[in-house]
Length: 510
Image 1: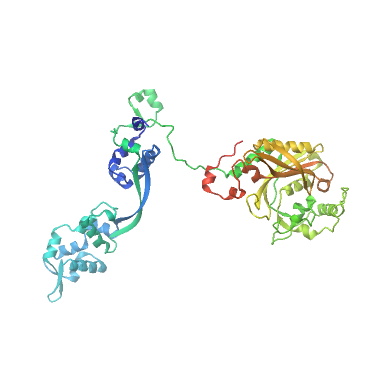
Image 2: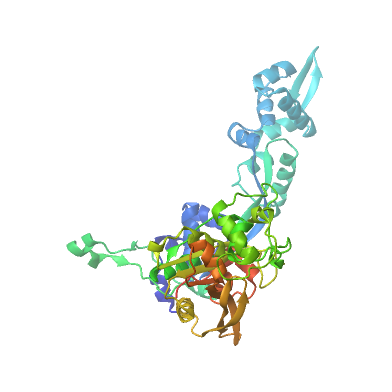
C-alpha cells in the first residue's frame, strides 16, 4: 500500500502515537510519553491495528507500585530519617523520640530495628535509655539513601528491569509492611508490522486534521484552507455484535408471516393438555403405543384434568362403536381415567381439535395455523429432539379436497426456499387419506421427509364440529424445515446457544 496514502488517513491521535513507536513498545510507555488519556491511546492503537500498522499482544507481568505507607513516606520522608533528624544534635529519651516522631508504636519499633541494622543509632544509659546518632547515622542523614531514591521512581515498574542498586533498595523496602505492593498486571505490547516499520521512518507532520466537512465550511468557503483526513473505505474494522433475535425466533416470525399472508388465523393454547384433547379427540386409540411413558411426558402433580362432559360422551361413543359417524370405532371400553391424564402436548394438532370444537356453521370456511412447541419422550440424537416446534395448519371448508391440501403445502415450502416438493402416501390415526411431505435437498442430493398431512377422518370432525365436512390438516417439524437454510446437520446444534454462532448466523431472509 502507498505509504503516503496511509499517512493521509491518519487522524490527530494516530499522528501523536506513530512517532513514539520508534522507541516505545508498550501501552503504558505510550500513555506516559504522549500525555494522552488511556482511552485515546487505545483508540489510536486500534485504528493503526486496523490499518495493519501494528499488532497488539498482551503479557501478564509482576509489577511493583507504592502501597499506602509508601505513598506517605514519599511525601513525608522515611521514618528512619525523621528519627535521625530528632537526635542529630543530642541524644534523646526513647519516649520523647517516639512522641516527637508521631510514629505508631509498631512503626517506631520497626524504625529502631532499621537504625540498629544500619548502625545509624545506638542506645546509651544516662541514667535512662537514650537514643544517640552514630557517625554512620550522620552520613545517612546527610545524603539521599537508595530507598529514598527508589520511592521517587516512576511507578508501576517491573522488578526484572531494576539495576543493582535499585534491586537492593527494592529488597529492603519489600521486607517492610505497606510500603510496596506487587501485583499481576496485564501489559499491552506493541509490535510493528513491516508496513509499520516503514511508516515510522516517515516524517509525520502534526497538522490539524479535520474528520468531517460541515455545512458552515461549505457556506463560508473555509474548507479551502483546511486539511481533511482521507478515509479508506476498504480498511478492516472489528465486528461489533448487535442485538438481534435468536435465529429460531426469526424463522418462526417468518413462518407466521407466510400463513397470515395466505389468510390464516393463528391458534394458541396450553402446553399442558389432557389425554382427552391431545389423543382421544383425534381418534387415537387408548391402547396406542404413542401413549406409553416412553413416548409421552405425563404430569405427576397434578395428574388429572377436567373434561368437557357433552363432548366427552360423543368422543367416548366414537371410540367404542363409532357413534353417529357410521364407523365401527375401536371396539373397546373407553376409560375416563385414561382420558383425564395430564401430559405435555405431543403435537399441536390438539390446538386444531380445540379450535374445531369452538367453530360455528357461520364461521365457515375458515383457515388456522400455529407454530408452537411440542414434547416427545424420545432419545436425543442428531435428528430427534424431545422439545421442538411444530408448524400446524387446518382448512375447514366443505369444498376442500386433497389437491387443495397439496397446493397449500407446496406454496408454503416454496416460500421457505424449497423448489422441489413432493408428497407420498402415508398412514396416520386421525387422517384419511394421509400423506407425507418430502423436499429435495440440493446438497445431500436426496429427498427428505419433513412432516405429515391429510384430511381429518369423520371420527374426528363429526363429534367436534357436529357434522362431517372436509378438514385439511398438517403438522410439520419446524427445526427440520429450517436446518438446511442454516447449514445444520445435527438438530441438537440449534439450541446449544453458542454465542459465537448466534452472533454470526445469517438472518432469515428468503
